[in-house]
Length: 55
Ligand SMILES: [Zn+2]
Image (cartoon, rainbow, N blue to C red; front, side, top):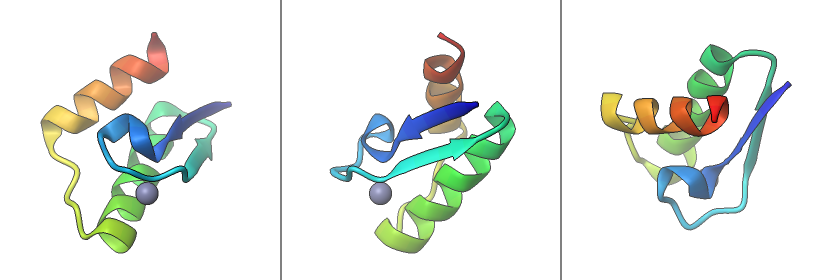
Protein backbone atom coordinates (compact mmCIF):
# COMPACT_ATOMS: atom_id res chain seq x y z
CA UNK A 1 0.00 0.00 0.00
CA UNK A 2 1.37 3.36 -1.02
CA UNK A 3 0.17 6.68 0.23
CA UNK A 4 1.06 10.32 -0.28
CA UNK A 5 -0.04 13.59 1.21
CA UNK A 6 -1.27 16.19 -1.18
CA UNK A 7 1.17 18.60 0.48
CA UNK A 8 4.01 16.43 -0.83
CA UNK A 9 3.44 17.89 -4.27
CA UNK A 10 3.74 21.38 -2.88
CA UNK A 11 0.07 22.11 -2.26
CA UNK A 12 -1.29 23.49 0.97
CA UNK A 13 -3.60 20.57 1.59
CA UNK A 14 -3.90 17.65 4.00
CA UNK A 15 -5.62 15.22 1.64
CA UNK A 16 -4.09 11.76 1.63
CA UNK A 17 -3.99 9.54 -1.42
CA UNK A 18 -3.75 5.80 -0.89
CA UNK A 19 -3.39 3.15 -3.57
CA UNK A 20 -1.79 -0.20 -4.25
CA UNK A 21 0.83 0.95 -6.71
CA UNK A 22 2.95 3.99 -7.44
CA UNK A 23 1.14 4.43 -10.75
CA UNK A 24 -2.22 4.47 -9.01
CA UNK A 25 -1.06 6.98 -6.43
CA UNK A 26 0.23 9.22 -9.20
CA UNK A 27 -3.03 8.97 -11.10
CA UNK A 28 -5.06 9.79 -8.00
CA UNK A 29 -2.82 12.67 -6.96
CA UNK A 30 -3.05 14.07 -10.47
CA UNK A 31 -6.84 13.77 -10.50
CA UNK A 32 -7.13 15.32 -7.04
CA UNK A 33 -4.77 18.19 -7.81
CA UNK A 34 -6.66 18.96 -11.00
CA UNK A 35 -10.11 18.67 -9.47
CA UNK A 36 -9.56 20.32 -6.11
CA UNK A 37 -6.72 22.72 -6.81
CA UNK A 38 -6.93 23.28 -10.54
CA UNK A 39 -3.29 22.25 -10.69
CA UNK A 40 -1.86 20.08 -13.41
CA UNK A 41 0.72 17.55 -12.17
CA UNK A 42 3.75 17.93 -14.40
CA UNK A 43 6.22 15.21 -15.31
CA UNK A 44 8.61 16.84 -12.86
CA UNK A 45 6.09 16.67 -10.03
CA UNK A 46 5.24 13.10 -10.93
CA UNK A 47 8.92 12.21 -10.73
CA UNK A 48 9.22 13.82 -7.33
CA UNK A 49 6.18 11.98 -6.04
CA UNK A 50 7.53 8.70 -7.37
CA UNK A 51 10.82 9.32 -5.58
CA UNK A 52 9.07 10.04 -2.30
CA UNK A 53 6.92 6.95 -2.58
CA UNK A 54 9.80 4.64 -3.36
CA UNK A 55 12.13 6.33 -0.94
ZN1 LIG B 1 -5.15 18.57 -2.19
